[in-house]
Figure (cartoon, rainbow, N blue to C red):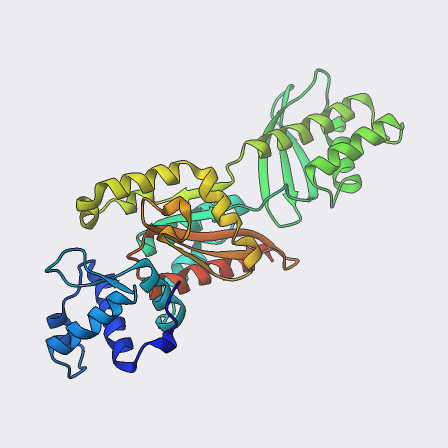
Length: 344
């Protein structure tokens, strides 16, 4: 249970903030002399030590070694993030870098955006892609040879993707055009799964108005897209190498554990998925989530929305609990807003 901010005196709040901010910047436990020298609090090291002792007894600070300074506990970090942190807006350079990647085909934009977010935050960037299949807006075929064509799908969300389709024998240009027209007119607005069900029903009822060759092309076109969609990863991870840096050299076991957790994408994908319902920023600190009980990691995640306002995915970062939350939290939030504009 995190102590409410109201339980801290003004002096305790000032000392606590200084310890947390110094620790997040340096990664080194903070001593009373450091606080007295740079805080401007006009308190002696002895007075600061007494306050730090009180904060330790409240579970907000911890001393890793007997003679060392103090560092925030996970409960202390939670109190700092929720009640004391002064967030810094992303710089013009950071905003421009994120916006530059949020363009083009949706999946490419998501991957590129998570990559740049990883670089800017020095964490691993995470994107949970929209669940389900895109609704169809338009479908076309471009012949490559007598037995292959490129199927071009345009989704209602603006995504444009290409796949190569194997054609049955004897399919000509007219059959390709007929098939593309049928999909664009009769199946527009449906997901791939829904389109397959309607096509099967219309063929069974003799209402498809397609000859046998065109029917085969439509079925193959929808099938290759559905099969491909089922194989897509739920989550995109970029920049995991950022988690291995000189500062982490003394804590290689924690880093190894974190990399193992990232490798097992399913668990983290489920964690991110829980942020869909929040419709706002979610911050998971260390053992608050059992997934990170060993690695002591933090996840900052924010949902992004589709054109209809519904949450379609989540973007975020994962890294050690010693994150620059004041900088990274607004950065993730801005990225989510940028992806929402892309989806509109």
